[in-house]
Image (tube, helix red, strand yellow):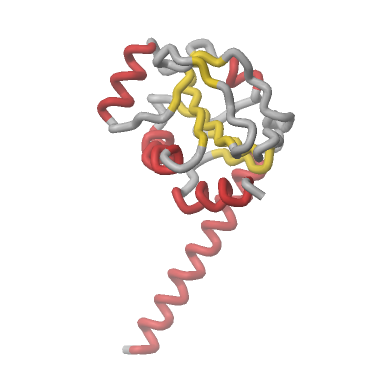
Length: 165
């Protein structure tokens, strides 16, 4: 009995390792064409009408998402948690009117900073082809990490922590 449990436990661990490697390989492949330059968005007006200027001494997470994207919905709480400790700017792409996005945020208990990219102009500038897509910049706003697809809260925290150095 003990050997069967050990065997199944090994199989489960191997499965998770293979899936993790595969997911990271897919993300790396999808992120090849993403914009790699320094973060340079200026004159940013958020959904709530406030102006956004990135802090010069802190890393920045920029997250592209859409309200119609199921993976984005699953990841939204992760972005929310990170936004409580780090500087986060999210960009809602082709998600409708400001009112639609505000309703989505309220219904999901989200309060991170949002730009409404109604026509995907910003997304095209960053070469976004899939959602969600996340960029992490260091304090000098140089790109440190990019991720296409779901990222765990722990993964985001580790990348943000790394970007501080």
